[in-house]
Length: 390
Image (cartoon, rainbow, N blue to C red; front, side):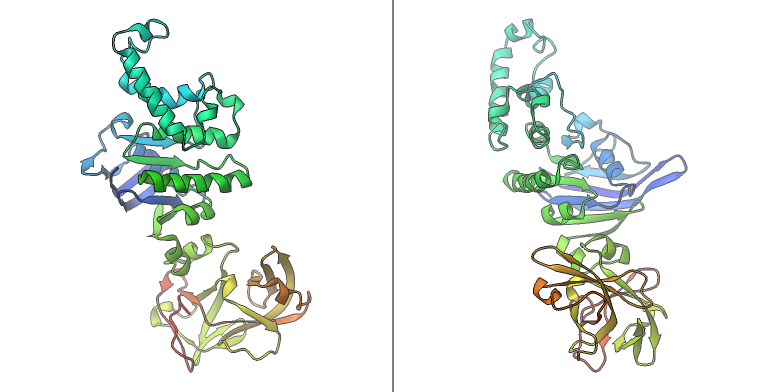
């Protein structure tokens, strides 16, 4: 296994720039997800690492070896594709064995009939079959080795694709949205299997997805990409709690973080017609943007005294019961989107649709007008609070 280092990667297709100076340092044995919306450049970046595309500028190193000039087969990388890329006429056993057959057997030893009798072929094939059995067992594929892909479910095909990558024992595993073809229930089970597989192998994994849940639940670190740039590269919880950019805060988290426009006033800010005694540094500008996660709100009937300093008022427009929690959608004047609060279902039952409610918080993320993070703020007249930690 090896460290993977990307430095200054640029890529354009014609006049369209796809990647802009992408730099990542992925540690040996780390699970890193490249996450972002469609078209942000994450799959292009993965293909460049694999050698299937070439960067216009930049450098890729695996361990101590710069691999920019090496073909894909010489990079010691295994790639798992979104479409599985299994050979339909081969059995599971043959699909798993194929990388080893191509690497260890000569052209003559691979001949369909005579090859088995070629000198040395029997011992090599026996060793390959032992490797296939070793990989198939932990993936639950041992009973399926004589089936063809058409006889397998989507999840089983995905495990075959993973096993075919594992059998090579590569330095780096690359995965391009491998769960996107699975249904929701199977996706949850398979992402758990992939995370457990990573822990067993202690290998370097680079995983591309547009699904933030996959990235957050499986990764040691997440590289969030937009418009061909890495906006933030950090552990999942750090990205959630301490986003460096408003776009990062809005992409990570379900439901999406609430964004509240603000203007400076004497002694703080005006937010949705209410005064917030929040002091921001000058770089926040005259019109900063505040962001509040749904679980950071406390919700009470309008007019209830609030112990928290940041308050907005509105009308309860909708409730979403999700079993263990309820999402309240509150319509607030001067805020374009409804403000969403996550509350206990028992509390939600005490609030009627159309009723006026107050939302209060002491935990806020602040950004300037361009969406760049303002690192700290202070509630005036209240105990000092870090914007990100409340």
